Image (cartoon, rainbow, N blue to C red):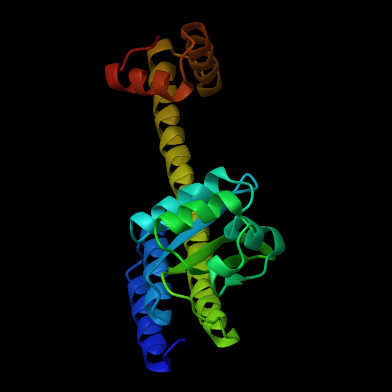
Length: 233
């Protein structure tokens, strides 16, 4: 069961990690580590829900990697069930309730996994993935243990949502900068053609556009060549 002091320390450590703005992969790996450490579990992994199936996104060791990869292949597993129902799936002792996920249980036995829980990552009203926790001895799953993992999940989801929005803003800003730079080059090329051919700026632009189409080249690339050579095509 979760020790309050350990949970507080791990939550604080997780928040400190996020303050450094790490990439998504590192966030998910740290989420798995904090989840396992908070509850004293042997191992943990994180899967994301893509195309209606779980896909392993982070794992702490060989066992969590093998179990995560098994859940990618299998249609029946704790993670698949958690993702489908949007509710935690917890098993006190896998050996006492065999047959629920037959193929998955074979992998779990190979690594000595007895107790497990899969806790959904949720955001914007939908299931984004799940944290999978594993132990080699039977253990109960009191509600406050699962709530502790949900807390860490919520922190991670909020960060990733903000990170995604920030990335989209950066991409938009880059696109706008590129569009502005392209416009400046095209205006410069129009000026060169207008001066060389003694035509209006509008006529110069028509000539530039026709030449780009004839060469099957981008307008920006054609304009840049005109500016570089200072010659009209």
